[in-house]
Length: 378
Image (cartoon, rainbow, N blue to C red; front, top):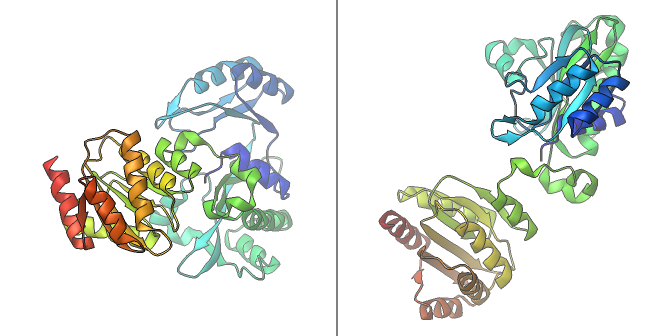
């Protein structure tokens, strides 16, 4: 789950990271009022969860409260990469002397978090990594010990930060680590962290990505979710506790178990098809949950066939069969269905489906072949 800049910076401020004075505004009038409070010279920043806001005209400098209102009016009417701008952040303008990149993410190969820093801040860190990887300093952090003081000093020295700033840089680095851990983040990033003309260090921008699997521990953070960046089908799936990711293919998949779902998608591709989604209904799925999953799959106009692959361990085959028929009673469709049921009550489930004239299969390979064939015929 991605957080907006203003949300990330609010969290950073809570952990002692200095940020510019400013507030978020939903109207141009609010932007003008905030600009007046800050002295008139402000930066108006669109709050959308995509990169390239500046290049798209979504970040503008205003020299007066009146200009701030005019610019906010323009930005709030924009769409950036298909996303509407609903809010702007009005921050005091800073006189920048130099820019630094500072971030933390998970290094899966090393199996621990890594803090990265670069004196080449203010630009895409991916671009720096591609063209000048030697400019990025990396320090792995033991999750049991946390970021140590000497590590922060090593980073400061490696990016040639003037010694007068080492103490405050250490506080910012530790604050970023604390925020990263406390929020169960997978990314916490400041780009740029600037040294101003009056020798202050300030986080001008902020970005955080949170682990969805940990949001049950953070109901306050879960409320910050921006639904504009999510497909309606994924929002609907979350209501029913379904693991769903929309893809670009034309064969809908309903499977119980993440590993089995990945295998199902692989075998569809093996036989020349393209999966339209990843969907894991989980163990013990009830009929209403199966019905909800099928409605979500069929809401995709690209779906030309649906493949069910259910292994009945906790999940009962007859429950799945009744869920399929219940969904089809609600959602009238001509999309062909191919069902492979094995395990608990599978015989009864297959009987229920056979009575309803559904396409059944004994093996996953047979099911995949049939699903690809009917999708291509459609």
